[in-house]
Image 1 (cartoon, rainbow, N blue to C red):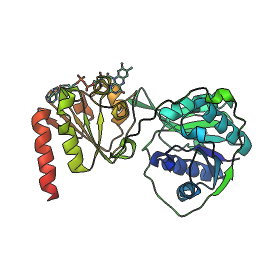
Image 2 (tube, rainbow, N blue to C red):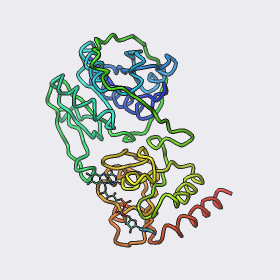
Image 3 (cartoon, protein in one colour):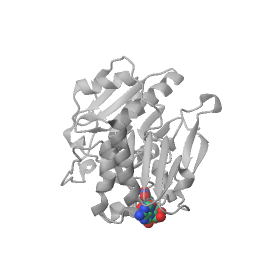
Image 4 (tube, protein in one colour):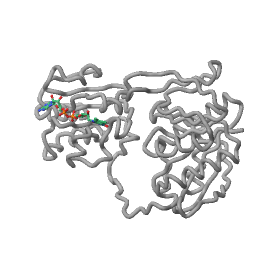
Length: 322
Ligand code: FAD
């Protein structure tokens, strides 16, 4: 019996949120009296996989097939199912992100497992494997009991603080009986984001909405982000209008982030937007409409025009740093 956890990486670098998933899986494993095994797919160096030991994994099952450097949902499902069967796993952990949403439900069906999406806590074993989860796009919480023998848990990224320990892992190759149809999707182009702080890993985020009026004003967001050392984000209509790239869009249909500071400029605060940012530790809202719903979720609010407030805030940060 073991707890297994699916790892995500970008060009061979394991993502921060996957270290968090490993830490989460390891804690569950400890409570169950077993150990955590990380499942890694694609080209990742042994030295990189060793880092998983620092977050509690005891073993890595590696499938070094280059085709897995891109997300092929069927192939990823097959490898996770193969790993779960081989390890006789009782608990399977993925992230509640774009990849996890594509993979976890399919794996749960194949293994006749109960699925918890949007997990925000460790399972309470005294309460029969009860987990706190986010519902209605983060508007409320539910506590669900998973009564099936196998459980699939999708952890919301940035729920827990990372804490490193010392530890090493045993790396084993996993052989998976892939079929050609597992790789039926052809990746024709990959656009890499370079030179910016990855949004999912950022502690500080400056985000803009339609109140910015157009892409020509985005320098206001970027200048403040640069002074703070923050990543930039946006609301969905902004990405839909191609003012900003889609990977910056946060919310129900975009990324979920939980930075220490989220500054929202010219964003109304619709429930679908809040779904992706309401877990932020501190929220600052700048909006000219005092009735904007975002103010209800804000720790600090500035009623004012973003065109005036953002440059003044940027200048204040610059002066503060001097
Ligand atoms: P608006 O609603 O147009 O708000 C602009 C705000 O800027 C207003 O509050 C206005 O007072 C303020 N403003 C205007 N000018 C200024 C100024 N000069 N200075 C200061 N403030 C100013 N949205 C997301 O963001 N993420 C999602 O993932 C998402 N998923 C969705 C999924 C579904 C199924 C649906 C139906 C919708 C989804 N939406 C999502 C859209 C969401 O409902 C809102 O329409 C969207 O978040 C609004 O974006 P906005 O706040 O930038 O624009």
